[in-house]
Image (cartoon, rainbow, N blue to C red; front, side, top):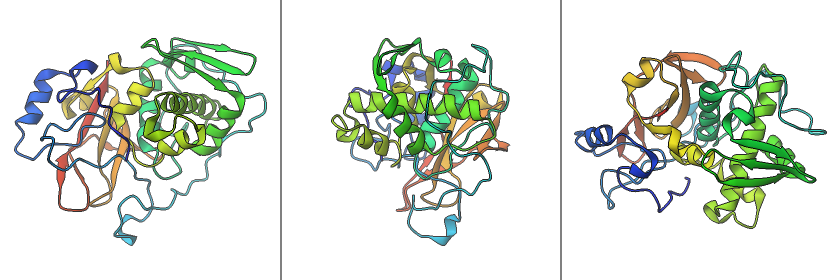
Length: 295
């Protein structure tokens, strides 16, 4: 499970979350809901929802949550790493040609990071320079300035590490390349912020993205804290771009999915229309689905 930043307030006000939506969720008859990355509204002493950490497989074959094999796919694996640089094949600001199948999760534990990247690409554009304020080549790699003013310096070797670690698959090599770069930057910011004690190790930062994360934390690490808010199912069903977190294969299978055009993304395929659900920890605690939308 990913750590929750101590900077979050109970209603997430620092991150432009709608206070009326938060109050509605406080008043909900259930104990609370899985707020991806925020301090739970159901009280400091109550159980916390699990981080998003599910990959498709056979969820009923194991009673242990978050312990599923990789989703089988015939899609391309991550690209060769020599002369790696974000794709220049996409027009700046242009939405992706196939946001569902172009790239998708194939390994366990990093669904939150991938769903946030997918939603961000659909909202702002495919290229890293659409997501981030600026990307410059340096002697050793890349200097990235995020929309919130934070900067990271990423080496070429770290980019190669992240590309292999993310394990993205899909039908669009250029999109895989761009998404892998964004993933690498997210991991670098995690290291810079000592996420889960990873301050001295980029490899540990990468591992921290694969052990179950709160989706809002991912958007913050992408520099988008001023461009995301808590949302509702109605927001997603009306066409807003965002993510939904809920169980997809029984208790303890919390999974984060991008929602595009009102439809959930399921491992490279168009899934069902965004619907209500629950997040459970496999120990009898349940929360309502968690929705984040990009503004």
